[in-house]
Length: 245
Image: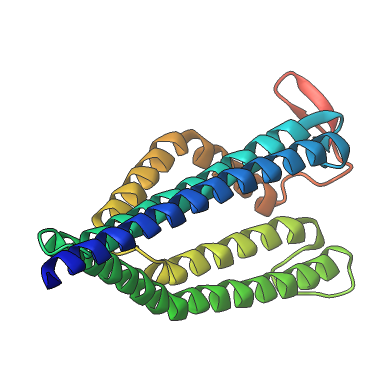
């Protein structure tokens, strides 16, 4: 008799869980519909447009579409979690399926613990990345102020002329940001994974192959600039072309 009562209690608990699941799914559908209606109304009334010289780079309907996709993803994730918890609860109510329910529960807990641990481990690394880029941003601001003063004649640096100060500033800032990226790379989450390293090598290979001609032209331009063969305002002739620098 006690066994029959336990089965009846398990069936009642499963039925109650089913009712709760149905109500939760209905509430999720209602909330999703209301949110999508608000997004649709917002897109037609007050959504911003991102335009550059009259060219729309990001329209209101694109923003609304992205928000709708995000809402659908959140709702789908919530529904999947609800179904998972429902299956775990119902399976643990019955003796024959309790092992399966316990396995589902342990898998969910282990996954959450792993994700939480990974998130906690990345916090110091992300903090180091933020500090590196903040310091680099400060240094580039100082370099900009310094070389702008040189270009305007208000400050002098040995070996740096006013007409090459702007180019030198860009080179120094580029080297600073390159150093910052190199210094921050080991602290990026997943930087030690094989996939991350493969993408980095592939990107470097593409840049190497695609920038060969660009690097040659850039070096030629730097040689002309720092040799100071031509100055602003001079009338020059290069081949068949004549003009003022």
